[in-house]
Length: 247
Image 1 (tube, rainbow, N blue to C red):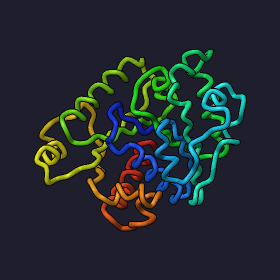
Image 2 (image 1 turned 45 degrees about the horizontal axis):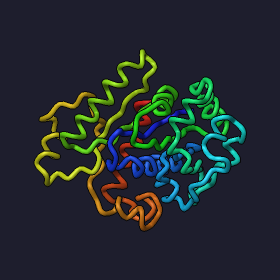
Image 3 (image 1 turned 135 degrees about the vertical axis):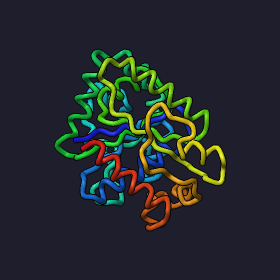
Image 4 (image 1 turned 60 degrees about the vertical axis):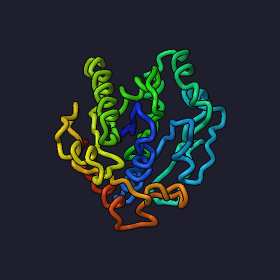
């Protein structure tokens, strides 16, 4: 089982859209796939028309008072399930911090899904704290959507610096350009390598498109209502590239 965390310290960069579309693509390729919506905003749960509620809250899952399998919901797509968000996750750092051996507990929680799923996508909140660091340690890859702007590049530098202090337990970091508008000179110059990134980005990039925004209207991955479009092809290419990196 592969654990892929979609994360950025900066919000509004297309993180949840990437999670949803990458997971959908993985399921379409035949992988038994789960999205765990760890963001209390519950955007991934909204896209799949699932109520953002876990009985007993996140604390119940972490302390294994309730099996995560009882909280998992199916989606409209074969092979793709969702462990929904819960508003209690806004206190996730406090919950993890007061839990004994949180890394071990989270590992057991995620590894317990191993028999049921080939890959688990973690839609992480745009923050950094105790819980985030534990999730970094159990993930195989950290997929980082990065808008080609100076502030986003600086955020990527901060992420790299933070992971450097994890003493060999950091995941593979896979940044990619998101919400790219090549009509903008800054976007174009950064994508073409005129400004060096702290970590080499993947080749696939996601264009800025109203179709991605329309996911909220359709409450569905892009490929389901705009198959063959530039964003749909870009997410598919990104998924293939991530899979190649992990293999």
